[in-house]
Image (cartoon, rainbow, N blue to C red; front, side, top):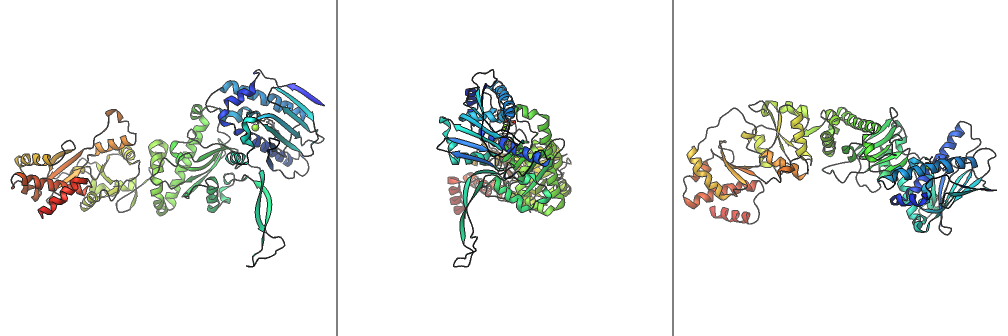
Length: 631
Ligand code: ADP
Ligand code: MG
């Protein structure tokens, strides 16, 4: 007996519409069909536990089959199946009205693929790739009659009674001529890998041959048991990924192994992980890994995978977690993240906000815990962690509040301090005459060695701030910490960086300075260098070249595309050439005549440039020649 009917829809040609608007993501039909099969199987398991489904359930694997000759792709399960009435209800009426609603609402809109499963278009997405779809199904209910539903992509369908021994459902897709890629093993394998890797029921796709010990126990020449080829089911998924298990039951090795499973291509191992497990006020599980970030910010992003009940949804999670957290790797699984809405809506969603702040809190707590439990270990990880923490502190107020207690700074002697500890440490020596604490820093030991050494000789301490975020981070700390300013060691002379209440008298008179100034101005590029005099100690260098803090920071922030300073145009490189008014060699210039004056001035400035690595090319050659002459 066959029943014919018409699916009750207003949009006459819905299938062409489905095809057209979901064009970019045809492949998700497989995710939809496989997750339906998984759902049907999970339901059966529940019904069996409650006693509603009787008897032994047998093998519950879901299977995906390709038949190239027949041109079909089949998804087969041994779940609850459907009766004719259920097909009528769930396929003809509900599923279809969902599809129609979807098409009407989201015609041509961005992000349509994300929404597909959540409007009940799930099953009908098969028509994106199939010219004909058959459902062959036998309900688990006692005495049920097997039925087949068939439709060729028009609203007409046909239901017939069929012979089917096995409980469950087979969805047979007769693949359309423009979609034959979905008959290719590799293509289908790729889709299953992407979307179905962690579905909760085993999924079989073909078979594979593996080597096993010969059951006869026969040995080879070396005395090892011989291996034989055995054909086994190829199971494409891991039904029990670690985020579904209790942290107490897992070892570090298991977390590491799972990381490898998630990122088979990754060469680096993560430093540590956080296991997320929330069931109130929303559901969220997941494992986040901390990669070794070093100086890298950009390339690591988009590694977090988002799942909904173990079904892969997306790996672009920017709207769901705060930006700095996207530096982390791992998985988040939440059935409570609404996917049936647009991306901008997602950002404003209350649940999503709660989830984001919860994750932020968990991450901060984890770091705090590590800091409290094993300070030495935390310090050893800091260099790989700081970019992440600084990024978080810069972009998330709540994270700043927590992290400012454990964020570390490292000085030139490789000692680590919290921000508070460090302020305490330098208070007695680096407080200036206005009671402001001046924190000296350098970007690297090598580049600023001369300045670091000079500062240390004065008893000052110098931080090494070498993260790419340093320009922004330093500004932030200045605005957050009270009465603290940061100065890079090469920003000015030490006496100017940390102004004390002591006057050093000048050996040179004002007239002598006026006489010397043009001589120095003549030997350097006037656009770039400002010549000034300062009363330093006789033992300080005769000339110091510095780059004013403000100008340099503006430049750095501009290079990073931040700081909001672009309206001033670009910042030129500017330096101060500070002449030590108490240095005997400087004084000696006055005793010389004509060109000899210039020569000494040039030699002194060149030496200062050389110490800064600023003397290059022909200038360097000339300098060397002149030095030899002078000797
Ligand atoms: P959803 O999965 O969101 O409910 P679908 O369009 O994917 O929407 O499926 C519609 C309905 O068809 C399902 O809710 C289910 O009742 C039924 N169904 C689909 N596939 C199967 C299957 N393999 N076994 C049993 N029932 C199924
Ligand atoms: Mg579905």
